[in-house]
Length: 415
Image 1: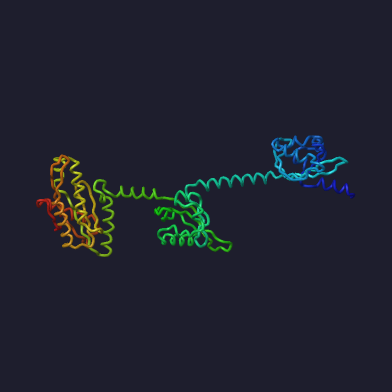
Image 2 (image 1 turned 90 degrees about the horizontal axis):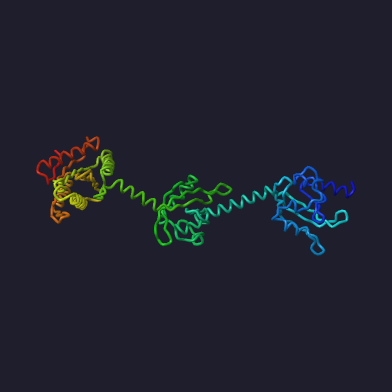
């Protein structure tokens, strides 16, 4: 095979598209170029201007590659979009070289189809753009720490939540943000044990010293050898949610008028204490309290004065109780007190103090009329044979009935 035949052979078998251009027109194409341009025969392309196949936006650049510049022909590579005979666009990486073809100055253009690669690049660029936009605008804080708990990366949301800029906080130990070191240690143990945490509760200190509630979702990072290498995840400020939850809990368990436990909350708590007494055989005393002649107060002075009486009564009772004692409103003017670890003499003493305190109250109605209060109290103490809280409540209620039957404004022990 002589030299010319050898080059012709190489020209034909090259997998990349190759075309020879003279005066801006196609004079020779290899089979790969014919296939790329989606035609059946090279003859259909010969003599056509290169511009017919170049995307209009790319034509100024392609023309520049084909023009003679001084004594040298264009010799460079670039990316161009070409349009096939069927109207499809392909992205080519083009290399142009000045050559001599059949005694004339020409340019040999080699083009590698980069369409799929370019589409992947565009998808990657778009993906990176979307991730960056999400990263910079997300309301929660993304973070990443190393094996020693040093913060390596945080998202801009950290400024809104903690008051720090990313630059101020990156490179510092995450532990410095926790008001209680135990919270950080608990998180670290949990994620190292399970490899992830979900809605992990905790607190952090903001730049201005406030303590906020947080919820963390995180997963462990590992090195090539499977060793723990840090963690990354999302930290959310749940302070307002926690405040709302606490307020909802307060509303669900508190009597709206007096601020003490409502019937449901009192009985639930009393049930727990009762079961503890059963298990450990400890002491527990129950008092039923009823404001005397309360209906008469409402009828004579109005419901506003009745509410005033209930509020002041509750405040008086609270002043005579220990922090460990339970006090609740069962309904209307009926209240209940549970004394833990109190025997009969101690319970009687507390009940008498309550009775005397209530009797000493002097209130004024909405119209300025003075009126006073008295209370009847029935007491029952836990017995080992009590199999349910209801029995204790029934005995205390019977004792209350006796106190009211015997003239009111008195304390009566169960018989």
